[in-house]
Length: 379
Image (tube, rainbow, N blue to C red; front, side):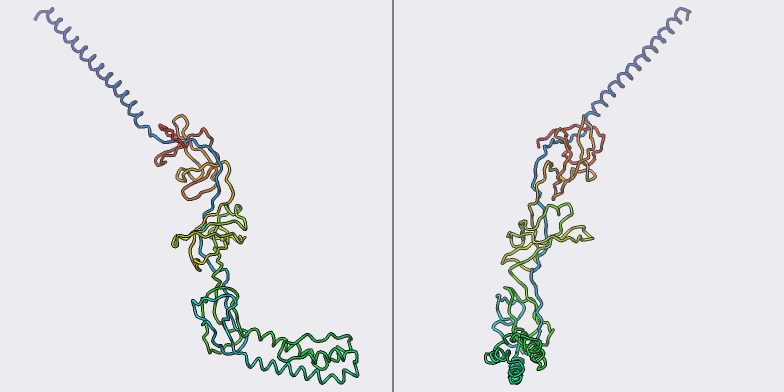
């Protein structure tokens, strides 16, 4: 092979190598450009779409939810103050027996006490009669009034007040004959006479019976328990945040899900003692109704004050209990708000401007600073 031919072959080989290197470089450059474009499109496709809403603050009635169990407003334990045998009445004193105000509940045999009272009245009459001769000579000015007292004396009726004494000497004379002591002893016995019969102080029902007809009872013996069925009271725990919105006399709508009925109640009193466990204050609500029962569970709603300039949002949209997510320039921003009240699944807040686009779609996976694609929703 001559020298010219060798140069030609080398030149051709070098040209092929250069073309091959150029082709490879061009292919790599084109591949990098395509990869950059694909990455840009993919990044755009990966932006998470979120729904946003712009809110306008307004006024909302502050409805306070409450619940509790009813208890009878009046539940009384009855005790005997005298001794005697229980006699039968028109209605047996048994659990579940209903009665009306004024009905005779217990009739305790007081015949011996009544006869003893008559004897003591007669003894007083005799004592006064025996002092009359001395009274006529030693205190003639007082004789006529004491004589009138004897003339009108009736041992079957309650004692009338003794005549007024007009001088110290008369008072000492009457006291020396033990008249005052006898008089007040008899008045005490007369007072006891009214305790042999026990009458119903209200319309109600017997909830516990501890005695039976024919039983001998003594002073202090527990006879039973009665309950007023006309008025009940519900104790409902209220948070410290809501207690300032409740006033005595406010109306409350109560509901029984078992009966499917509503009842009207009224706030009767507000406790000032905080429950150390729940940090709530008991509020007591009076309620009337023939279908009510002791121990019944009721739920209710009390229309309190009006919340001004608030926004109602889903409670799940709160972040760390005092923030919400808003979108600014396609970026999530964590904005602090004031939570005024929570009611069920709703939270009432302040601090959100009308131009703030708050995220209302689920917050799972979202974080502050994240780029998103916002889709505005109507309020």
